[in-house]
Length: 137
Image (cartoon, rainbow, N blue to C red; front, side, top):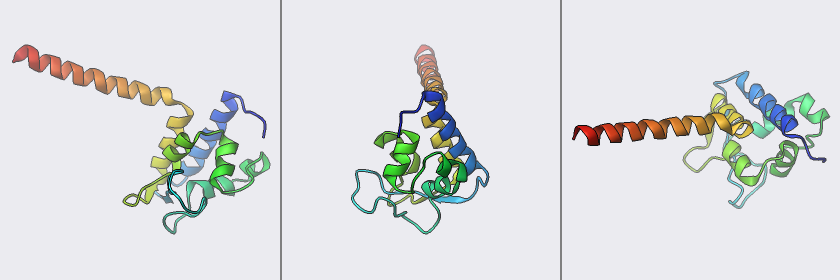
């Protein structure tokens, strides 16, 4: 597969998030992280995974998504292992999430600026509270 421009990559990720947001309360099965051993496709529970929903989209299949495996999805969306784990991985305690949460994860990978701005805002608020407490104390 040829390299995608950043805009193409982002538009594919945004489309994937939009597919999940069509039914925001649907439970999406999370997968084992890439560093965990086991089947590369098998979900941790019986509901569809984000990979399943991406592969069900005819536009993605026509434009090159060839399967539901971790490797197929990683290549098609040009994701690193870390990005893919961030989007689709769970743990033994959290095996499913609502589709809107998975869509948010995808959007944050597509455009991390918003998430970084939120983090900076929280850090500034903490600094202001600590500074005010020290000033008053």
